[in-house]
Length: 343
Image 1 (tube, one colour):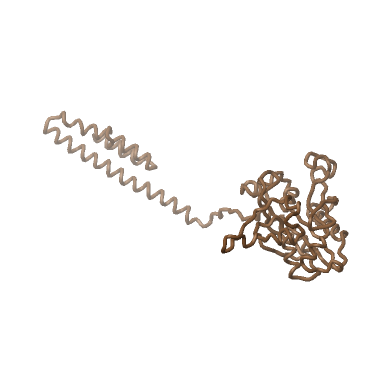
Image 2 (image 1 turned 120 degrees about the vertical axis):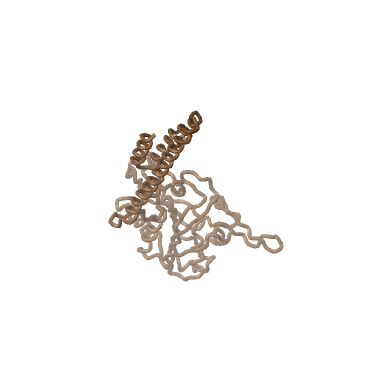
């Protein structure tokens, strides 16, 4: 029994973790441990021998238990000491941390705004919840105009006290209402851009979303011509996509401009040679523009004989997709950190 005690204490002293120490405890003091089995065998001995052997076994059991508790305290002390050393070691280098970044759409929006601000444009803003008048009527789009079908609109009905429609509100479908609000409160010359969110009732796919961003541009003064519009937009294309990227104007239709045009830019992938991205044409559609329709000037009280102006609308998602080489608009809104961290 003395040899068992000696061996047990040696094994206890060699353990380095609480798990190893527990295994030694079970070996000697567990339900099937060596000391436990010895104690259970006392019933086979004569009474005098039972008393003598039982006393010795209990002393050995206590000595092993004390050794286990003492060594357990030492192990805990060593662990705490190691932790303390790591915590207070001020010579270790600090852990790196990630800096926040602007969303790629915000980056592109800021770049677009900077280009036009450097060209002399001021930034104007307006409400995202608009009235039917500013979103459609004042832009030469009356109730029965077929062009209303070009834009699927989110309507919001404001009820009066008697349950009737007090005012027809909607989520703006473009940032063009801002130009009407500016012209109502300011006489020419005017040179503004209106960046912001717009909303349309559209199914979400690789090139469409129910919420997206636009930058509306407006310039009004005496003797403003289509040549001025063409020059400004050509500068924008070159500043945004590169000095060697060409642009072209195609006739189009918008109710609030006349004449109207679509602006195409040279395909960034094939440089105008033709590829699957540009449908072998060498061109990709970029934005819409035109000379402000005289009827829009009539709504804001401008003298149509004295003033002319141009307007344009740029879709920020489209610009970002072209500039960053992204083929799916949904990626901008899925908040995937692997995607966003690239920009």
